[in-house]
Image (cartoon, rainbow, N blue to C red; front, side, top):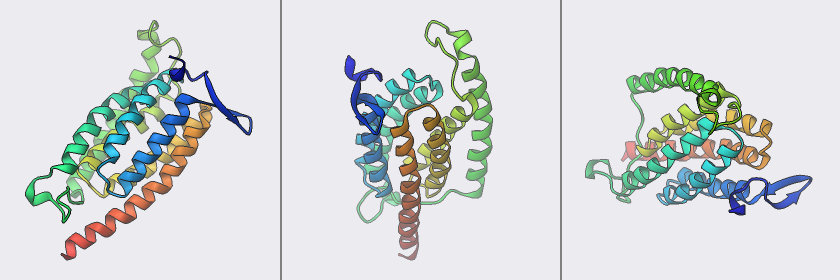
Length: 219
């Protein structure tokens, strides 16, 4: 369908040609992340639409690790919605939804070391993907290691977000800064602007979640 072709232009603004695909992927992504920062469980449902559109977008601009990441996100959006909406009794907040908590030092080390190791493995995979599967991936991966780092750490941050760990927003902030640069270079400038906005949303999320966590602790 033409709607899913990044070369089919929706509108042009200040000389930048915007496709339907990039525009709606950007809008749904912004709404989903803002709802997450506000601790709104419906962020996961909007996220399902966002990752479906993003999968198609990343395939067309050769960001293959990001493309594969969307499959993971689709599944975790379903899991996240269930975890937030139907927590165990001892993990529930006063709205009967999952309560915000922190990672232990040991968990932080596991996520950090594991994330770096996985980045190296995925980066090497992405670097050679066009040679191993030339019929599916005719062009080499753009920024294989940088793209792999944002992919892996997005997975890490998503697991933290599913369990409502405060640290998720600090990881997201670092990932969003790198992604802003990467998408800008790849000429999907609205998506780059979206991730710049995500940097500010991540800061808001960190503030809001920390305040809520301290309120739980006092209670």
